[in-house]
Image 1: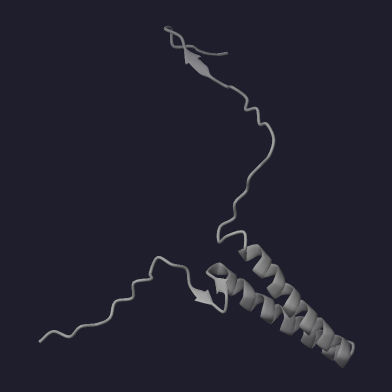
Image 2 (image 1 turned 30 degrees about the horizontal axis):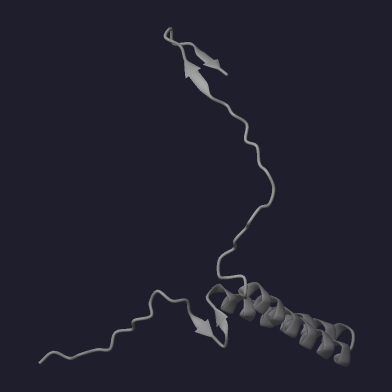
Length: 102
């Protein structure tokens, strides 16, 4: 008798962890690690209390920045504004085989 296994149907959806989706999960982890490193360096070199403030500020600031970037979507969408004029550079080959340009 064959065994039945459940099939995961959400393969086309981005991974979600605590409100962060896809690549922003990794950005969040990077923000946490950078905050820990900056806080630890500040604690060891300057002051324990200033290091704690730097740690909390950098972690919270990084996560808020990433949450704001995530609202724009998973992919970078640039919408340039203005009028763009592209230079026309057509080349025509004569019957004799010489190239001429307009």
